[in-house]
Image (cartoon, rainbow, N blue to C red):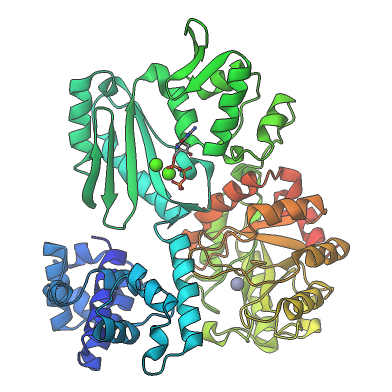
Length: 579
Ligand code: DGT
Ligand code: CA
Ligand code: CA
Ligand code: ZN
C-alpha cells in the first residue's frame, strides 16, 4: 500500500473515532501521523523494516508504529474495522461531502439512523435536518448543494492518477510473454481533465486464442491493489482498485487493433458521428473494423490511420475527438498542427525554498536544464500569502539579486527573475510597482477572497490586468479539479482587456488545476490573447507535469504560435515586457 492510501486509512480512522466520540488527543494523533506520512519522501512499506527511521518522523511514536505495521501486513486496522461494524461503511463516503463533518454525521446517525448519501439527501429535502440542534434551513440548503456537487464529481480521478495507474498496469503486463502492445484508450488517451474509468487495450500473440487469453487474464488479475473483480469474460476483464478506480482491460487480435483503439478511445459523440459518416459511404464501423455494408468485405481495421483515411479524413489526434468540429476540419484537410511538448522552450512559473517550494534556485534550474529548456523563471509568492512565507518588497529585491547571481553561475539555461504576485481583494497588487518593474516576469494570481460577487471579481481582475507590470494572469479561474469551483467573473471582459494590454493567460499544467480549461483557451485564442503553459512546480519532480498542460492545450486546438513559451529566449523576454 502506498503512502497516500496509508494516510487515507489513518484519516478515516480518525474521522470514525470522532463520530464515536473518542478522546480528542488520540484522534489528533492519527491525523498528525497521516499528514506526516503524506509528505514523507520514502514509502512506509519499505521503511517498516527499519523502525528507527520511522520513529524519527515527527508524529509517529511507538503506538503509531504498531498501527503502521498492521496496515502494511493486513491492509487495514483493527480499530477501523471494529468502528465500521458499529457504524456504517457508507459514513466514510458521507465524510467526503464538504460541510458534513464527523460531528454532523454522528448527529444524523443518532437522530435518524441515517448514514448514506441518498438518505441524507432525502432528510434534507423533507426539511428534517433543520429540526436538529444548531441546524437551520440555510445549513440544509448548503448540504443539498454539497451533495449535488459530490454526485457530479464522485468516482472521477485526476489525469495524473489515472496516468500513473495505467503506467503501473503496463509495467505489470510487460512481463507477460506474448504481449506486444499495451495502450490506454478512453478519456485518458484523449487527455480529458478527469478520468471516470481506465480503459486499457492489449494486443499480441497471447490475445489470438481463447486458452492463452485466459492465461493473460489470470496474470492481469494478479495486479496489486485490486479490490474486487467486476466482470470477467473471454476477451475482457474489469476490476476495481483500492483507490476506487475502475479498470477495463480488453485483449484484442492484432488485425482489429486499430478499430478497437478507435472505438474505445471515443469519445462516444465522436464515434456516433463517424459511424453516421461511414453509413453514408456505404460502410459500417465498429470495434472490429470498417467493412462494406453490402457483402461485409472488410476495408480497414489494423490501424486507426487506415480507418480515418478510408473515411476520407485526415488522421484526427485523440485530443480532438469530442465532436466539436474536428470531423468537418479533417474532411477539408484543415486540422490545426497541434502544439507538442517539444515546442516548449521554457517553464516560467516555479517556486523555491524562499517561499513554499521544496528546492533551491540552483536545483530547479538544473532540473529545467536537464529537460532541455532554453529558459525558466523563478516566481515565488508575495507576502499576502503568509502561509507560504511570501516575499515583501525588500525580500523580493534581494531574491532578484540571488536569481541573477545564480543565473551567472549556471550555464546552459537562462533563469528569469519573476514573481507570482497576489491580486488583493480590491485588484491592487501585493508589491510596489517599482519592485515589480525590476522583474523579468510578473504573474498575477488570486489566492484569497474567492467568493466575491461576479461584478466585484471582474473589476478586481480588470484592475490587475491593466497594471502595466503584469505579464501573465496565473491560474486564471482558480478552480481545483474535483475540489473547488472556478470563481465567477466576466471572462470576456478580462480577455478583451488582456488582448489590449498584451497580457498572456496562463495554462497551469498542474493536474488538479488545468486552468484555463479548453473552452476558455479557445475563447482566448479567438480574441488574440496568448497563452503560457506552466507547471507551477514546487519541486523538481513537478516539472514533468508540463505534458498535462500540453494535452489540455491540444484539446483546445492550440498551435505553437498561440503559446508564448515556444518563443526563443529574447523574443519571449520581450513579450513578457509587452515589447
Ligand atoms: P470516462 O471513462 O467517463 O472518463 O470517459 P470515456 O470516454 O473513457 O468513456 P467510457 O470508459 O465509458 O468508454 C470508453 C470509450 O468507449 C468511449 O470514449 C467511446 C466508447 N464507447 C463506450 N460506449 C459507447 C457507445 O455506446 N457507443 C459508441 N459508439 N462508443 C462507445
Ligand atoms: Ca473510461
Ligand atoms: Ca470504460
Ligand atoms: Zn498560485
